[in-house]
Amino acid sequence: MVAGLITAVLLVLFVAGWIWLWLPRHKPALDAAARMPLEDDEGEKNP
Image 1: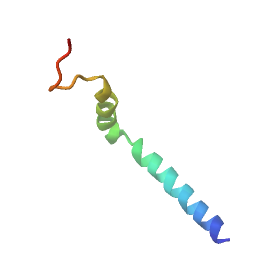
Image 2: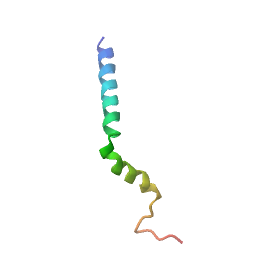
Image 3: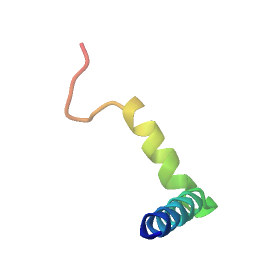
Image 4: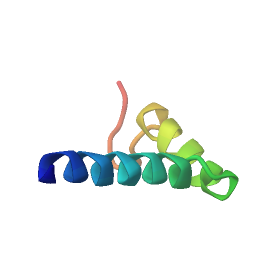
């Protein structure tokens, strides 16, 4: 019974985190993080 309650709580927390992450106000930060690997580092020089 306790294991089932823990599973249910973790599932609710996971879904709540998923919803919180995909709120429209987080889009600029997510877009910036998605572009980060494609941007050149300022300190490195490309040959």
